[in-house]
Image (cartoon, rainbow, N blue to C red):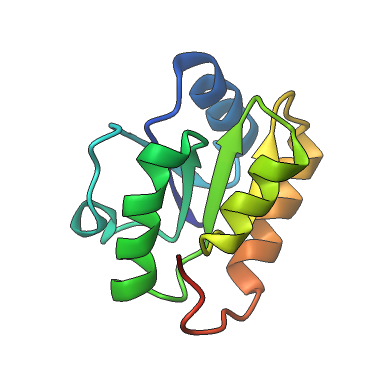
Length: 121
């Protein structure tokens, strides 16, 4: 069972993600102003897809906890947003509508995927 942090997600997205993952993982909702230190008890982060908000947190995570999976969540499925998130160092990118099977797969693969150090914007 992983400890999943949902950082700064809007209500609907947080509820959908929480419902999809709560049977297999411990889901924690965290505010938009969450810091890396606030994630000390988390195994994976799902963060709001607003680049202005997630980039600072992502940089801090990559600096202090480089192996921590970090997934950017959005309702905007444009290729440029996906590439921006991955280039900034995100482990993956997830856009709504969410499928339960997709989210479970995403968590499992992100937790078991080796990370390369030094990949951050």
